[in-house]
Length: 140
Image (cartoon, rainbow, N blue to C red; front, side):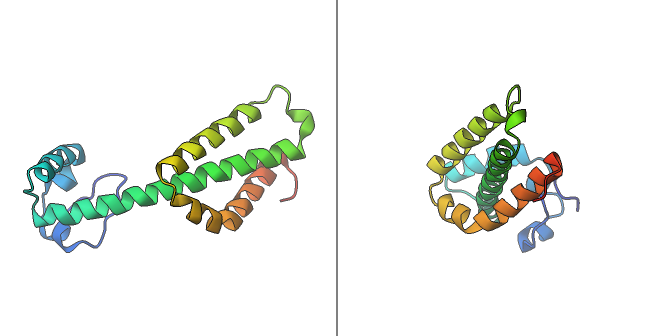
């Protein structure tokens, strides 16, 4: 059985038992079918498992996006602080504002992510410092 592109294969028994399910072959069509089944309260056991998995993955994607945007924000703030002569004419200011706006939107939509963001700040900071060092030639 082939997995859908860009979707890691999970250890779901129901998915392994069905060799050619719509979930694996046409994800968009599956989402439309399942949303209708949810509205009609007629969801199959296989689809219940897949829906649960997708919902969990949605939360993970939100956390990954938050980490990524925060890393970019911190990296650009470091570059801003480390290279004041390169500020003029750079897009750093716009990038900082865009990341702040996107982070604000993410946290407004999912306020509970704030706790995970605070917990991950040491890792985010270390990644941002390394990336800023790589781009500027400065030590981390």
